[in-house]
Amino acid sequence: MKKKWLLAVLTTLVIAVLAACGTADEKETTSGSEGPADGGDKKTLVVGTSADYAPFEFVDTATSDEIIGFDIELIKTIGDKLGYEIEVQNMDFNSLITALQAKKFDVVISGMTPTKERDKVVDFSVPYYETEQYLIFDKEKGYTTPADIKGGVVGAQISSIQEEIAIELGEANGFKVESRNLIPELIQELKTGRFDAAVIENIVSENYLSKNDDLAAFPIEVEEPDYKAIVFQEGSELKAEFDKVIEELNADGTIEELKKKWFVVE
Ligand code: ARG
Image 1: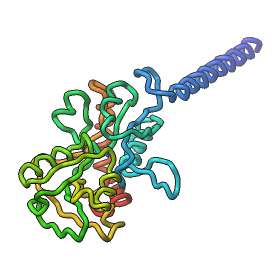
Image 2 (image 1 turned 30 degrees about the vertical axis):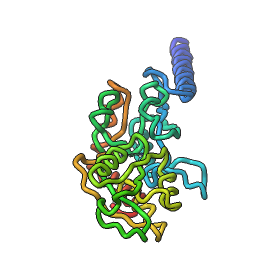
Image 3 (image 1 turned 180 degrees about the vertical axis):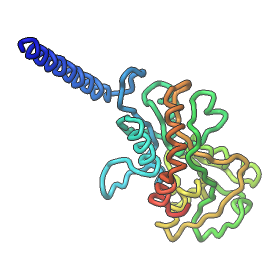
Image 4 (image 1 turned 60 degrees about the vertical axis):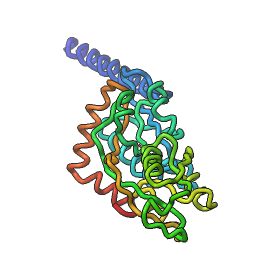
């Protein structure tokens, strides 16, 4: 009888000790949210984005200062599946890759297109979406082909693939290219007439077109497809687990649902 009692006390003790360990572990995880650590039992992923890109990543200033959008909901869904907390931080598009390399972020999601150049310094997930390019301009210009912009100024975002596309198009059609850090700056320059047009992808353009009656756009032909992928530090172990979940979310229709929720057109 005594032995049984002792066993019961011991078992309770062991359970109590195990439970205490559990709590300690959890505490460690939350303190890991202060910044990216290198692996270990870190549970918070610090995600960099350039929140100037509605509907992919943006702040709806009328309602809150939170960064929202298709990409943000996608990365949070992936985080949920894999058991990571997601902490989103804003930074100009131009600096995202350098910051990722410097381990300021664990991951970048920013409607970013895998290119050969970028692939040399970071790793990309499997693509989660593909878009096209538009030339967007003041409706009154009435452009129908890039050649119509001859002698004009076309804007694009610094360090984006659209900047390269604009430069090539400009050489072929005789217009100048000027770059800006943020997409809203491009739209502003269109409105003030400093830019005659801008190269912006279709989904982002459509978002502006739906809110601005005075803007118009047409698609342009480009050689390279504009896929979107999540970006990791080179050799990151996150890539394999993210790729698996992206495939799952594609197969089970979740990504399709997100498109319906966030995009004006698809
Ligand atoms: N897809 C283009 C690129 O990778 C543009 C992405 C811009 N993203 C942004 N959040 N501003 O160059």
